[in-house]
Length: 130
Image (cartoon, rainbow, N blue to C red; front, side, top):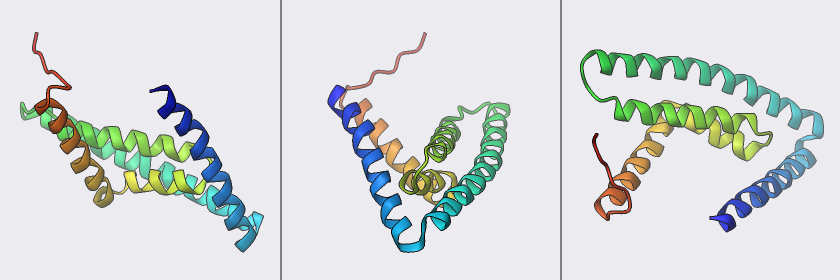
């Protein structure tokens, strides 16, 4: 686990710096900074609107007496997308916005469901009810 976290916190910033330097060299530093601000503004708007939409879907599922499992996964990815947009850089901005857009977020959710199902079936995760 330490190795994974170490790689996460070293490789991602290095990749972000590399992309920022390359893009800045091609379109200029000012334009690169404008792109970062633009993605932050669009991302904040998307995070707020999608977050409110997910929250209303969770409440609706609860009112119907259903477990809001899939809706909660939507919420997790909206939150993750918003957090990625807080990280300066173009790679994390792209990933963050992709988690906020419903069509691409659906891809993340299907993958997460598959991982959860596989871990439950192999016994790596256990579900218990009190």
